[in-house]
Image (cartoon, rainbow, N blue to C red; front, side, top):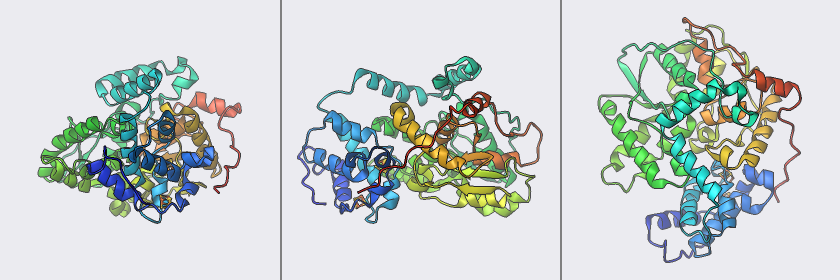
Length: 445
Ligand code: SF4
Ligand code: SF4
């Protein structure tokens, strides 16, 4: 694609990067066929090729109108288009630059309500001292919350199996995360128990917090870089002491932290450390796969025998990791089903489900219909956002896959079991108020 960048961006770091990405695009449109928002809306400007043209136009001096902003806002940043693209167009990085420029050069400010929502998400979700008590209150009053709010608050897990820290020679860092410890603390517990079972001690650096993805995707790029620097500082002593990896049990965080090297490449103090941190970052499934036989030898029967696996976009597209979760669960005696259209986003996409609720709900219901067709006892995924979003539309339990493995380990405590507190949701689905099949999507031209 030929480009003629405007003076305001030509020769800058963002301009150079955007130009080299744009020049790889040959406008073939293959990516359009796998774009979830194009499949729902059928508008070229709500597909990757259309968005690429919109970004190119703005970088060449066209006005950043509310309409341009809307089409970029509707993008899930699922990066399915990157997996499809035969020319290696790094759409995710391009749309980050595009959104930043459109925000800076907007011909009209965002509506007040939109700005308030974005600020509340950016400042509320990333601060555990704010989010943790709010979620605790939410869980306590969940039975009396209106349905729309109750679906955003996961029920308290029944699992009481606890990780008891044991010193091990092999140590790995784990990111506790920002919202996950409050929303689903059993996921970190399960991760630590499973790592312990294979002889790895989990180290959680207290000062580490949000990976930065929330701020980054809400256009607070400087705030996201501060999150990254804080995490690097928090992890560095353990890395120097020999921690083998930084384990991620939320694929959205893993995708972000793998970008640290790129995002901090121009920072003279942090560039080298950021590259090292990104290189040490591993998804939990990658870490456990080499231990598969040993781990399986320790397991009792799994809680669910037949599960539908929903691979998050941040795992399969952003990190290009496919296969280890299925391999681990299959080795553990679980019948793992991938549903039709498993490459498509479920609509969660970080804060997308709050900012674009209609599209997010349509994608969720479409995904749940496909998942239900595999007749699973439970749905498993690898990202807290997808798990909470999918659970909000179904009575079938939605778990992190590591919970199934941890629950099959011997130990004291109540087993997780199925239907953890989702009685109200299950009742809604039984009454026919659950997700309904959607009409066939329009065929791409
Ligand atoms: S598939 Fe790649 S090269 Fe083709 S239009 Fe999409 S981004 Fe451009
Ligand atoms: S990131 Fe996802 S929603 Fe955005 S253009 Fe690409 S495929 Fe479409």
